Image 1 (cartoon, rainbow, N blue to C red):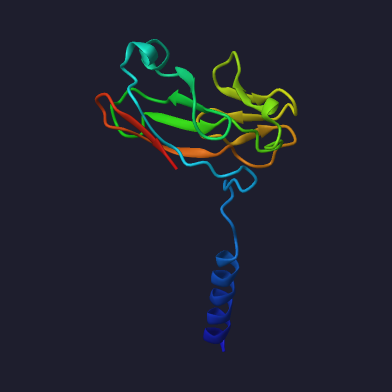
Image 2 (cartoon, rainbow, N blue to C red; image 1 turned 90 degrees about the horizontal axis):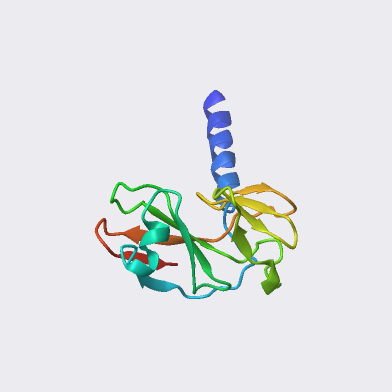
Length: 148
């Protein structure tokens, strides 16, 4: 009897999780193909991206992309790339996400929603979805590839 109840409970849990969606999945922003190669050591970017905490806006995605330097370990995970489209007001191009003076917070100046620059997670405001996170792979030497 206990075995049947255990099997039923385990089956219920597995089925429940199979219907769950990813928590940070962004569904309300239009899809835009992103395939960008940039060179962080290039003089165009080296001042902004040469140190931890450095960031730069680049063209791409829907309303632009924020590239942020997390570490300087010369590994594939040194950088993060986030879509600048607000997940609260995706249809409003004036609601682009901007880096704040603390260099940690991203803010949609229309709705007041705030996100973390490290991973795009919601900090406050009416937004409930994380920012779209693009795959950012650094070769450890000179090339950063951003894709979705």
